[in-house]
Length: 244
Image (tube, rainbow, N blue to C red; front, side, top):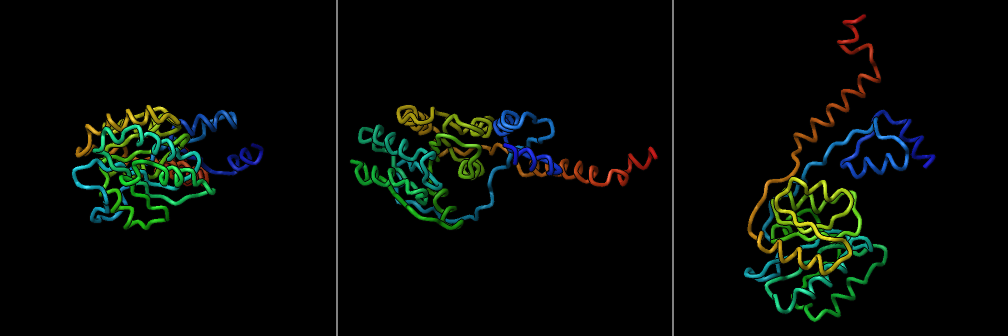
């Protein structure tokens, strides 16, 4: 807390990407007036790539993408998938991510699942090219986080216009507020997650407009940089010179 205050005081400007983060700063450090909120643009940097997909074309491919850690909630997704199957065998689950912190509980759930023949598990780091292929092969992106300030996989999914199922945590509620393809569910709740997936199934095949553009983000940063430049050399600003 003490070091955080010192770092903030030494910085020329502070930026956050959500009101959630801004509220955290105010709660921890007692101020937020000097912090600028600039929503992050959707990630549209991945190259075009043919779909990487094991799921048969007639099935709805659910994609989880990202590292596998305790707070990511992958075990909730696996339990929700078991609730969907086998009565609703139209779903296929693809999990792409590297295990961190020794969190192999999802690995064990996959091995024990009666539906494991409808689960693709890529348990390693993948390149940007591969990532592009897995998103191209997805029908719905599912992110069952227990907590999250923001999410790169969510930003990629929205840039591609995919339906998304995300938990109501952290900055994800704000990030999806203007995105018509989002279905929000309760965190750490496989039943709610399963219901959200069934709701999102009606959106499979549709494409939606991304929530935030890079132009808006760039304009926000430019304003902050201009303000910092004025603070560093106030006498050089034309309005200041005119007054002098």
